[in-house]
Image 1 (tube, rainbow, N blue to C red):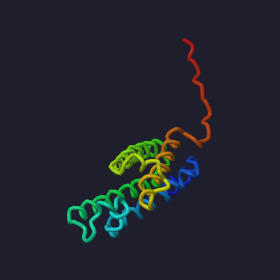
Image 2 (tube, rainbow, N blue to C red):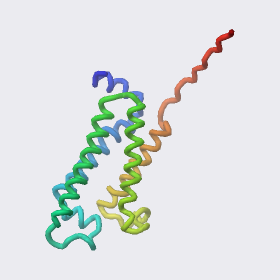
Image 3 (cartoon, rainbow, N blue to C red):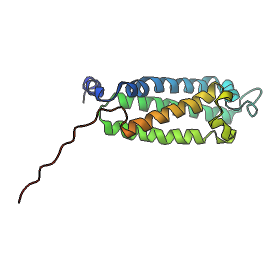
Image 4 (cartoon, rainbow, N blue to C red):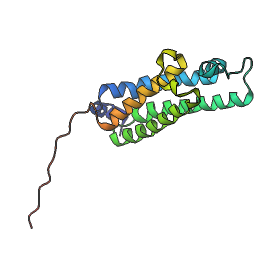
Length: 164
C-alpha cells in the first residue's frame, strides 16, 4: 500500500493516537536517546545521584548507556515509521501491545529506587517524569487504543442463515 494511501486511511485512527504515536512519543524517545548517549553524566545523576560516579563514567557504564540509547532509537523508529507506513489496525495493535510490554519492563527497571518512585510525583526530577510519568501516559494511551476507546463504533453486520 502506498504511503499516501496509508495516510488517507489512517484517518480511521483517532487524531490523538496518531499525534501521540507518530510524533509526540517518538520525538520524546529520541530526546531520551540523546541524553543516554551524549549527556551520560547528567543521565546518571538524574537517574540516581547517590550511586552516579562523581567524575568520569566507567567504560562499562558508558557502553550500557550507548546500548540503551540505541534501544530508545529503535523504539522511536519502530513506532514512528512502522505505524506511519500502514493503516492496518492489526499492525498498530500488535506493535502497540509489544510496546505496552516494554512499558511494563521499563517501569519495573526503576524498582531499586523504592516503591515511592511510582507514586511520589512531588519528588520526581526531569528523568523521573520521563521514566515514570511519561511511561504511565504512554501505557495508558496504548491500553485505550487496544480497548478501542475513541474509535467510532463499527456497524454490526449479521450473517444470513442459509436455509437447507
